[in-house]
Length: 379
Image (cartoon, rainbow, N blue to C red; front, side, top):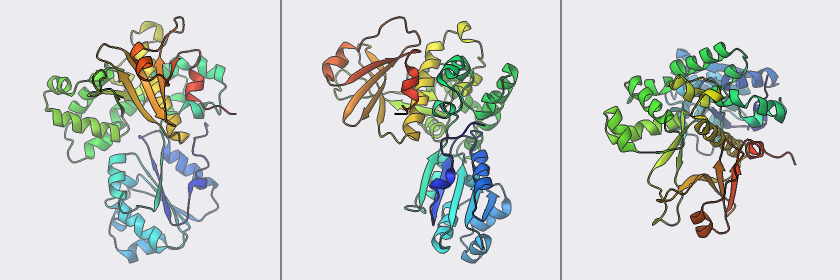
């Protein structure tokens, strides 16, 4: 079993604080929670937000009921906490009223859980985001040679733990299809303002064919026969539900640089391929460059998140089509990264980039050097 980045979770627990673990469904939050509880010496109670009685107690804001519920325990663990109405107030009562108590709550729906716990738990929580398996995590089990050999599988099938734990091509397809069709939109469809899965799936399919491209909201609205505001809302919900990742344009010179549109990537390439029913080998595809860009963009996102790397990410493009896939603004410097699947041709920084940001760095990331871009140095 691959060790997850936050293990051991107990090091993040603090008395009278709530540890929130967010992430997409099926990325291993429950497994991580169960492993933590199996190793702890604390007296704990494990419960689920799917439990109706638990929902009634923790949403009641009744001090006596809630305090009776946690009496005698040192650690309270709530899985799928987003299913409990007003869970933030219930958790606030626990950490405010029980000296020394520690709490873990997991949730698959960030917009739902974050909306409920944000204000009530101000100053009383720490948040961890668990993504599909990262190369940072895989590198603890496999060496770099093995990771490179398996690169085609990561591009095609992504990083969901269940997918990576089977070597069968057919089983991988079955599992990723199940996740995409049964779990991907589950949180959104129970959200009161989202009525139809068809429009969401159609929107995702349109985005799947536009990886690495700037997205026009007007064009999406026209193709889906809905208004632009609805498109904006759905994109925001899909981002908050850990389905897609939005990247905005960078500019300090508005006359030449394009910033009005955004690019969208999928949090997992396997999900993207499932949505368009495309699991062919890389040598039989015409979208390898797009998959490569998506893969590197999300692995870098995981690296920034897990390594606590403070950086503002953007893409950069001018009106005369000069562009850079990823720009990171960090430590007062600009770093430009261009993603190229082929490593046979040298790539140079765009002229306007060099002229405008003379002190900025520019690096091409290809199959020869990508490991150092997504896995931190051990030095």
